[in-house]
Length: 122
Image 1 (cartoon, rainbow, N blue to C red):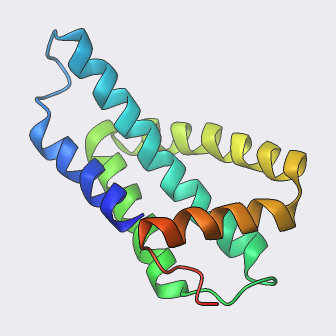
Image 2 (cartoon, rainbow, N blue to C red; image 1 turned 90 degrees about the horizontal axis):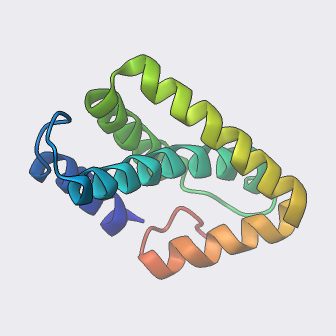
């Protein structure tokens, strides 16, 4: 997760301004923006749902979410970032309801441990 987040953030630094005309760059930027929103919402879901099942590093989780949110705010502006996060939050909530809290948390734990972000301590 740390590597992914750093990559996304660096991508915003290296990708030209919003007004460029290259569709391939626009698509890459859109993917990065959605990825940042997913980081914010996944961390919120982890704190809300997984803390009762696993021990979490709250400081790391909060730091990941904060960094992703700040990057989104700078890239899109606060209101468009909030709108995107709201949409992604709805998607994450549906996903948790569909697969179940226990399974969703186990999946997030596997993903984050594989990425080297030790949000899940145990």
